[in-house]
Length: 113
Image 1 (cartoon, rainbow, N blue to C red):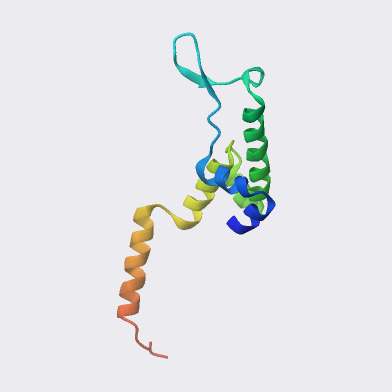
Image 2 (spheres, rainbow, N blue to C red; image 1 turned 60 degrees about the vertical axis):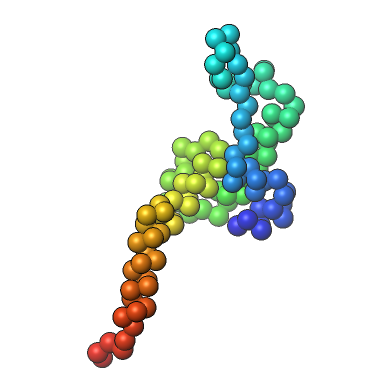
C-alpha cells in the first residue's frame, strides 16, 4: 500500500502515517481550536487536499464491511490506524500471536492421519 500511495504522490504517505493536519489557531482565551475554512491559509488547504487524496487511495479497494469500519474517520491517518488495528491487532495481541506461533513451531510434529 505504501509504495502504491507514494507512487501517486510521495507526501501522501506522510499524511497517512503522521497526519500533519494540525490546522489550529489560538482563540481569545489562548486555547488551540480548529481553524475555520475562512481562517485557513493556502498551505492549510493544500494539506487538507492531500488528506482527501490519501483517503481516496485508502478507501478505493475496501469492500462494504471494511468501509463500514472506517466510515466515521475524518483523516487518512485515522483510516489507516483503524484498518491496522482491525487486521493486526494491538501490540499485546501481536505478542500473543508470536508466542503462539513460536510454541506451535516448537511442538511441530506430524499429526495422526
